[in-house]
Length: 259
Image 1 (tube, rainbow, N blue to C red):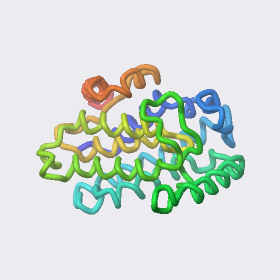
Image 2: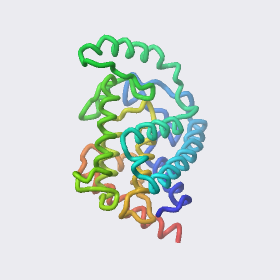
Image 3: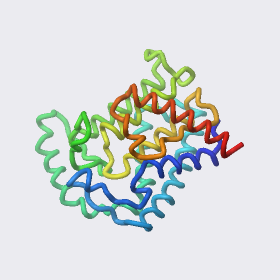
Image 4: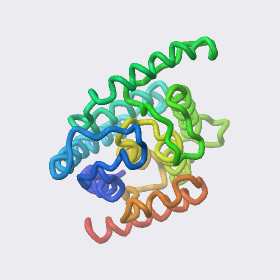
């Protein structure tokens, strides 16, 4: 089992290595013209991200410890969805200026109402999700279909963790492929959150690291740069190798810094 001080230490390192926001940089508008500026910038943003990430690490660890006692309460999609949404709320508290999205969100709500008859059901507009379609993903899920695709993602993750027909359960699950799948889909392809996709995806990966067997007492440590992490994120096989390397980095880090 990973002890909390090491878990928190590596969690913060992973966010710092992976997130531009954690460095006080607000460059989201460079990746999408429809993404707005955050409510903070510079040192204020950096300090707030650090404060939120410390709270996030504690919340993720607490959920993981509870999950180890009762995985069938925490791992079904119906539980994973609110869990991830709560992690989004913690990660972004006091950072996003929600008012700048009011007009775009109202327009998307109107689009949802008009499109609903074509889909034969109401289309949900999750307030935490992006309002644009990124051009750097392969799947390119439009915002009106994000709720549906995210639910399918949570259901697939549930099957990987709990369904015997997958020839997989918590006792035999292979950690690197599952973490790679979760990261590839949440951040690499679906990229659902209006901000903080890398931080919420890191929370999910660290949660999985704390509950999956075969990891022991060393959480995965990401590559030193954002570029190093994202180099493989849209190739599941390559990203699985990346997480095997991250687990080895984590073991080396524990031996070097915690012995």
